[in-house]
Length: 192
Image (cartoon, rainbow, N blue to C red):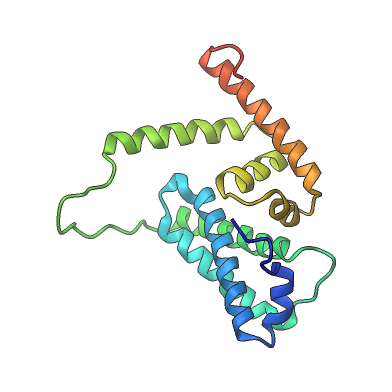
């Protein structure tokens, strides 16, 4: 979580043109934001490298745009979110077209999760994603940013151009609907 006295991305963007320290802090926060969002959107494909690449491309796009960036009443988070969404779309299109890289042979035993546990996690994630696809697009984005990426209500509101109250209401409605869909799919009745 971010400290309350930390400068906003908007403040950092204004300082970044003339202060390299502000630029570095801005880019670190932008990279973290883009990486978290990319991991969520690409995670079901097991594409950590792609998420890292997208976050890097977002940082390069922000650095390139900073000298000519003009605030137009929208939060800087919305600017970053838009760039990230576009870079993700590009990466997903490229993944659909191109060959997948082959991992090198390991030097030793794999201490990671077993294939069975990975399959169960992927199945659970696929079920959750399928249920989320039944939600309206805005509710899906809010849940992705709030729950999966870990953005605060204010950060999510800024990224989506909404008020914090509207984000809270939409999130509550989305979670209530998801609970009902889970209860219906498992036949468990009402879920508290």
